[in-house]
Length: 435
Image: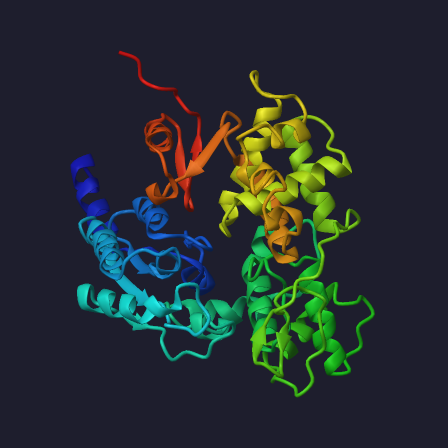
């Protein structure tokens, strides 16, 4: 066969290949799962637009988005227009897009605008799936089992990998080949009202998932010599076929289900006390020390976690990037050479030094669930964050009250190598332009 003939055959074969399936969006999309899931918890439409840019030509795309923009105060029609622009950018690349409309919910920030925004989106773009009316887990999101049915191959991936797995054990390490099986198990535990913690369905069989397995077994009088740290093939199959029980034992994880209210979480917030013996706490500190290149004391680690939790939104990569900026300053000329001095420098980190010099409430008394999110993000993402980034600022222009602040924002947006993650711009301030 001549080369030209080979190229013709190769082209025809590629045309017959099944398109890749990609999922983009916010926490609703992240819950769908899948190997090509680019979604991020807390993502607004600006971040989802960046996700869309990473989708290859001709892909099948499932998209959510707009929920967090409503919560941030954006206007309904502006949100609908942004959703339409993202979908148009994908269809111009030959993608087949299914937009999944978020539920109205009952307990959202800016709840009064949820219905109006849903209506504006539905009138602007075709809605392939409407999540309104789904059984809610927290007043904002559907129950996990509802999301897993949304893509063509999701129902199979939710159950089959776990049934084919011989056994699963608590890490670390967290073998990549076990991610799907662990995710399926976590999904089922959540459906049975056993919280796997605020890290959610992450495919990692860690201490939180082990506590959920232990509680599940306790309620069914299943022998548990390993305290939930291991489950064999028969145990996995039994779990995947289990039904809810009247009694649900506490797991000790965040986002605990309350059978009396039908909701997760608690309205009260006890004083935060760092537990330096926690496995995730120690693992995350080791990652941070490797990134910084020096040891971090208990006091410094506590301050660093509080500052990160207070400065960053609930976007996992955003939290790791915030901590990276703080650590990068420690080793950069022009900044103090210790963590405490970097964090308490004047007019640098509002959450630490603002509010009358006392710091924000999230800095003084952070939510344990947010700290848990920070720890997981540090473990997963910190090592890959750019070591040259020493600045971050809000992407939303409404966050600025002066021209000077807006000018700084624009410089950050224009800076080479800078990046918008979640609602924050990260990178290096190139400085004011000179005539």
